[in-house]
Image 1 (cartoon, rainbow, N blue to C red):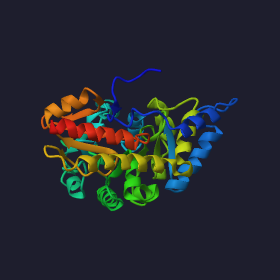
Image 2 (tube, rainbow, N blue to C red; image 1 turned 135 degrees about the horizontal axis):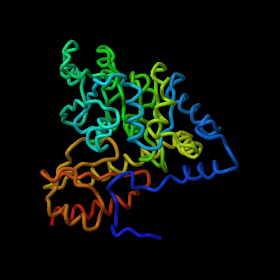
Image 3 (cartoon, rainbow, N blue to C red; image 1 turned 90 degrees about the horizontal axis):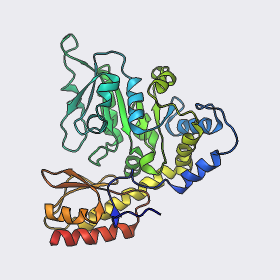
Image 4 (cartoon, rainbow, N blue to C red; image 1 turned 180 degrees about the horizontal axis):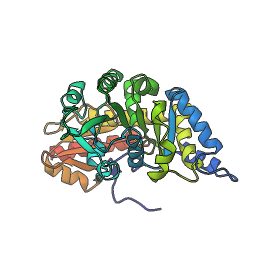
Length: 348
């Protein structure tokens, strides 16, 4: 066994193992021969499950990773070389995808500063530009992340307001749902309420951060946008030949709401962590803890001491803000040990 040099890992929910039920599902799919490229029974079952969750109009496209899912989803929404995307300045597509949107899709990102990672209808309206001005790009898509990159959640009502604003101005709403499960678990709502009923047009449905092994899904909720999906998925390098093994994972997460159980536990562990350090002088929790992320500012010396034993990211070195992430397999004992060491480091 390869052992970590750290006593604890709070860096990312990408660092976790796959959920045992997911691995069981992959093993169960590993039998005999099956048609390739999604013409298999496992993918057919997944499509039925997704439509049960999101509505009969949902058209899913299984993809290989989150960035690829975002590029595929956005490509279905952008038809003109002068289109643009309005998004928060913290958006994953703007900060952590190596310029994929600009390089692959060839469109401009109009980024918006936000206080908690969340766009408002007013933010969108202020950046619409002038349709008749040929010197300006033309916004076509509003893209948000749910959960945001700062760990906060849009309510269904806030998403609906953004969708209404986008649609009223000839635009579409895209949701990067890498942690959509954590948002639904925090808000206590269904995926349909949070996405379909709120008016979202295209969703990237995350799995790998919530117990999956590899793979995501693009869920198109407007049938008129789905026609090019099969072609663009192949062109975007997101078509798995042995798709049954990816579909089996997503299917396992959607069976018995395993996705919600995993997310609810991860959220609870973040809440436990935040509650255990909230009273520490010299430590400030930066944003509301609404998912499985805790952002905190603390003395530089305490960060250095903790990072000698724990794996986590410094989010902003200018104000000593760190990000601590929990996951479906984070235990209360893991959190309590970390709380104890944080308290020692900050007091020291």
